[in-house]
Amino acid sequence: MLLNAAAPAIRLLVLCTGNSARSIIAEGLFNRLLSDRIHACSAGSHPTGRINPLALEQLGDWQDASPPRSKSWDEFVGPDLAKLDIVLTVCGNAEQSCPYFPGTPERVHWGLPDPAAVEGSGDLKRAAFVQCYATLHSRISQLQQQLAEQPNQYFTPAAIAALMQSLAIAE
Image (cartoon, rainbow, N blue to C red; front, side):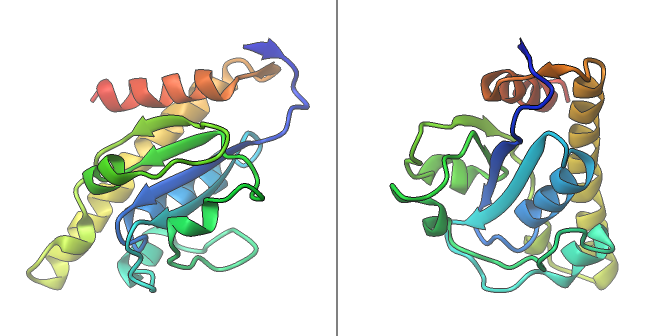
């Protein structure tokens, strides 16, 4: 940790396979709860090309300037792109096949079941999204609380990644 409250926001990329549910929810929550410290975006290894409506339902009103879209992680790979500070994978497939990103960002894994893969009634599907949202909201809120305890401190990407990893292990 370094003292520097005016430091730029940490650039975080959240990855999963389809970029239609878990990563979209995480992106929205990071940007809603930690926009003063973290700028989040999301992508997928094999994006579906659409956002699951149940993910949007969980997020309520999307608070970013542009609406979410399902996109490939290829949009974040290349020498001319802004350096990422942290890459967060939320599914095992993305963790195992995660590409190299310029600048060697910190890596964190929060493996979560895919709510979009749940089959059955609408109530079962909705319950899976509620659970996914609750888990992500809990972890991101805990991170927000830990960072708020020292509001004038700049946490390095490595320090934030370590905090994030500890939240997954603590469950």
